[in-house]
Image 1 (cartoon, rainbow, N blue to C red):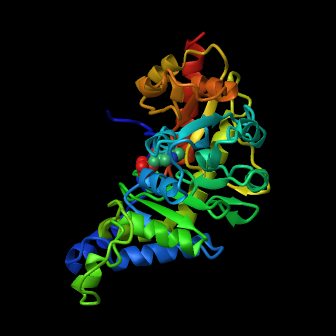
Image 2 (cartoon, rainbow, N blue to C red):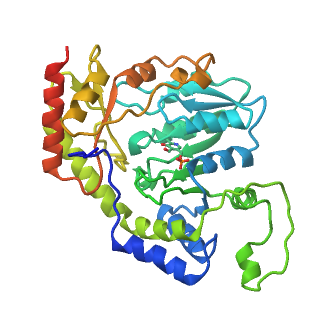
Image 3 (cartoon, rainbow, N blue to C red):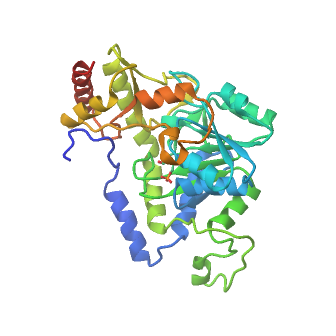
Length: 380
Ligand SMILES: Cc1ncc(COP(=O)(O)O)c(C=O)c1O
């Protein structure tokens, strides 16, 4: 498909190519010095005395977070209904029960602190939040309710590198922050992730779990710093490799600039779409939060046949997407009682994601909006 405006484009140039070439020339491909540097730079970027362990992907980060917090059979974890299935899958795969909380409102699709509180039972062990689209959740309320009910807090920051709540980076409020560096993310390495915490103890446990529970790395033995290793707990192989860590370093250096470029596109969309009937825009700007503008979601009016809009946009060369289909519509979850979430259900039916990436131009925005206007005229 030859898109006129595609949903997402990599923010890559010669620097990424050089970084990977350097790794190849270095003779060492698995977790090593670039990984250590990427972890150090990422932790410094987050501040708050954060420690960071790079992992294979964002789902691995979520899985590790649940494992180190000892969440398992018999436990409940409150998750957002408005999210990618990875959160619910990870909870299911440690044997715990996901309980979904609703969006706050049709303007604020992030988890509603009041609904989180309503869904707490004697079995609730943790709350897993998602800063959807890179918009920080209401952290004051969520941190307070977790403290009040003695619940662990996992922040899924897959959409939110660079997002800040009251000046502080998301991912530093909870017990553990989980990050995805998948291709279409703000910080993109293909497949990669990070798990972050301010706790030395959790950091140590996360590092063991990520690499077979082993006390030394293959690199340590290669460098002659160690001859053998012990295994102190059962672990997995969720390591990242040096190519991706090198890409991560370049992408991290570009992150703030790329997020600012994304924000300019979001502002242009807001100007162009303002007043367009039958479309509403969630997440108005707020002074207490800086968003990472990961995606640009809109809400179509009730009754509009979304697939016809998608098809019409496609015919004009505009790629669009849906973030996200409702979890209970997936075969794996269709029969499960996951909790009542009427706003999220409605958002799942009516949401449409328009193209957004740092290199997009305001002219591209006008093309997308004009195609959307045409599409809306054609549907009832
Ligand atoms: C909200 C959310 N959580 C978790 C993930 C999983 O990340 P990964 O694809 O790196 O496993 C994603 C990725 O798309 C996501 O959007």
